[in-house]
Image (cartoon, rainbow over all chains, first blue to last red; front, side, top):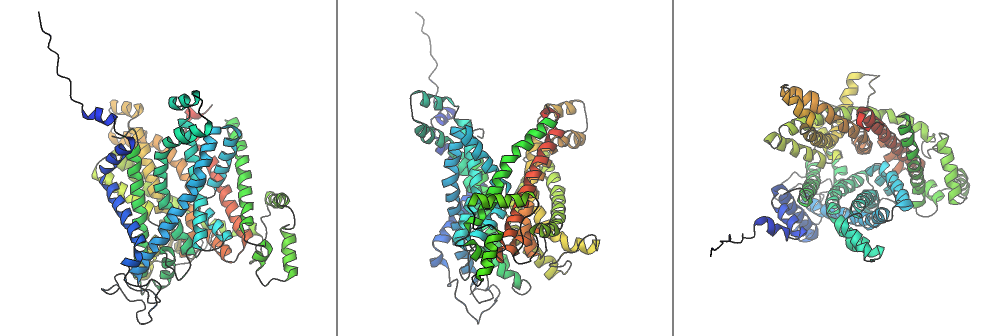
Length: 298
Length: 313
């Protein structure tokens, strides 16, 4: 009798392990492998920290005027110098983070709250709903983002809340279009057909089966739109349509800095660097997320 | 071909309708009585009555819309409350200034974006590629009004080479015109250069992996001929289309850039109108911007079809 030697069962290799890895874990693992995205994530976390704990970190009251230290250059007492009213620029930049992040978060909430359900409806129902929604989206997208935001802020009235609403409304069509496109691509998938064939109601299919698959590109878009919203808020505040004095905002700080460029350039340099770092971090994070969530990437 | 263009034109009609409804609806956002908001708190009842009659504010909303769109279709965009001039005339005066700036900015953006994108694609994953990508991302992330302020600080305040503000038409004095517009054009152009670079890079990478490039290489052509003559020619079509669409971004950017450099263009017109509660001007500027964008979109589509024989019916 001959004995047949069977090869030892192969150990579960890395590829098989990946199969059972959840999409969230896989995306996080891929994101961690991208140093620029991880640096950006840390910077974003620091910015959020600065916004929340500004009263504890800021060395001075951002609205406190001091006529004895008007337009002082950067020093140990005032790291970023002082402005035309003797206010500490570092404290104002720190507090300005609040206006920028609030604009980013609130406008995104508005855009997602309206854009995602409308895009879901348009893509899932199709027909007239889709046709009307698509033309409405085209119409909104035909008006450049900032011009629409300026016009809305102008009619609503100049303050930070209205600026955030204006930015949110201006960002909504991007989310309608993105969600619609993803829903169209998803709704003919086998698992959606299967859910439909076992008698699931439309709302359940849309919310339980279609929406989760739309989330990854939405997450990327959210990150990139926060960057755009930060610039938009700074632009509106720069024009006087956002945060009103004496509360600080990076945009309004740049507006007043313009008048003192020749003798107090620090007033313009630091708020600008703050906007640049914030926007760059969200953009790099968005790019990293796009790569990490892309099924084709390794 | 003509059927295709006619079809695209027909598709535009509902979009234009919704654009007009959106812009008309802006007026409904005004808190309280629109006539009172437009005229100010101290307006006399006669002035209020005149405004209500002029804008048909005493009529139902659909009727107000019909009056407004009827005026727009006959070229009447309303009258500026502050400047006491027809909005259409004001826009016609200011638009050439902004277009001059926008064309210069686009030239700068293409001059930087296309070669940078091509080099980045050809030298894929090299340090040049990484450097160009970092610069492009930095360009996209820089708020253009801050860049404008920094350029004024450097070239006008510190070096004294260029004026910090103002505008001179090229038909009046070409040299001074260039001096007053170069900084704003750089500010506007660099914002788009990053986007153009990224699209050029991605289109070039796709083109470099295509069969016709492989064939060109197999024929023994020089690499520079393969890159610049074969790959780039095909890769540029979507980039030029994108360039047309980026004009909308330029018009947006002009609002801030013109404010910083005190250029009396289209962007400054809307900002001044906003602060003077000159709502007819705001609506007019938004309408013309949207129509310009839609028109450019259409031209880009047609251009794309003309440049790409495979898309022709």
